[in-house]
Amino acid sequence: MNIIIIIIVGAVIGWIASIIMHTNARQGLLLDIVVGIVGALLAGWLLSPLLGVGTITQGNFSFPALLVSLAGSVILLLIVRLIRGGMRR
Image 1 (cartoon, rainbow, N blue to C red):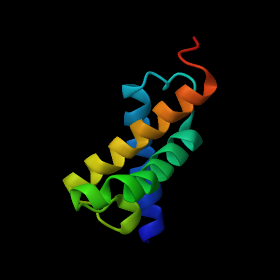
Image 2 (image 1 turned 180 degrees about the vertical axis):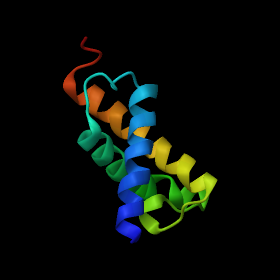
Image 3 (image 1 turned 60 degrees about the vertical axis):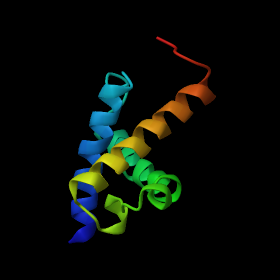
């Protein structure tokens, strides 16, 4: 049951991150899910030790955990943008 919740919450977090980074017109639901979950994993590796807050992939669905997961998703999209060569439109 936890994996279904992670997929749903990951989709919402990935969607919000794509709106923040202005990539929502180029990615669909599947990519939103991937961005949300991989971003949460990235946040768990980078931000969780610094902030002392878990992420959605660690089974923590509190508001601070959602914010940390969102930050990880935004960082992931920023890294992808930098690798792809800047702001292509």
